[in-house]
Image (cartoon, rainbow, N blue to C red; front, side, top):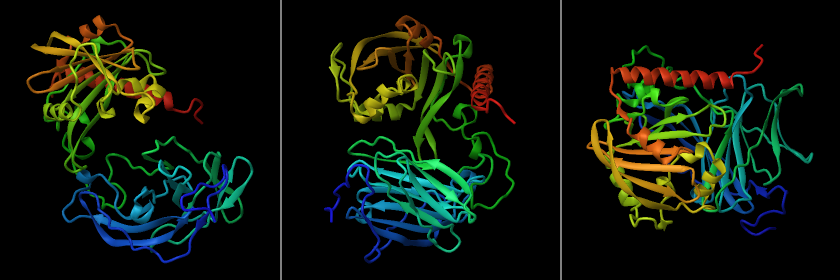
Length: 438
């Protein structure tokens, strides 16, 4: 027998055993606004190349007095996969709701410390009679379907060979193929884990998530599914600055945001406005980032910048590296994130700039491996700003930074920004619409 954690020969299935006593279930921590209504039970367990694994299931429900539009997570059946005793090697949640029009949903788990272990766990629709894992080289295995907790769909699990393209195929009782899906295999850093999925669930933003009672409610701006409305102005505790659409030829949209708290108590700390020259394969871009000053101070303490002019430093955390390069050079940006390209930066001095009618000192930063990137950082009385540009000259970037304006509710600028963002959304939707609809 192979040693514990010893990989199988390349391209071969790992050894899996399902004997032995079931481990005790691990405690679960429901999302804010939900409660556990059926405690976790271990529904499958065993070992893969001698490493213990387990699958447990439980059920959640709405917490007393909770409102779905403040929680925005599904309740009902839940499932989780773990590798190692009590999951010390990792694991994660398993999708347990098959979307309409599909025969299965599945979650894949990948482990940097034991890369030969790939775990797939999922559930099937009622009409599925058999599930097969088919490798590109012609080998195949059935993945048995098991009963889960009462009221939950049947589930499956399997550990395919690493590095061998494969697909999962579902059949009805008569042998007809219901659905087939390729099994993705993402790259995983040695000290990290990763996850992916097939046919993930979803629901309309303005409707209750699965498991919640339906009731009528008139949402106020910034409430529930209207949280992102008006570029998060209704809930942002700091000013948001934008480049008015008339100063940019191309697409304008909300580029992203991050913050603190769960769905019921979310408060943004960072809001990004994205400007691209075109939809397909853009070559030029601008990212205007408004940051809560307290969050900016926290980052300054976490990743203290070195302001020795012209000197490269390579101790910046990946959280402090600009995100704009990922829109243009995914491979180089990924290289920084996985550690192949060190996240170095250097300070190039400071100058003065007028933004939104206020004079401010800005800093110029350069990043190792991204010569196309220009970044200015500046502090205003109530906000910290970052202006990142790609393939724009420094003078042009500085010119655009001087055109930033504060976004206000009810303003003419907000109306123009909304129109520009809606036009970008229509362009993206048109681009992803089938070319030859029936």
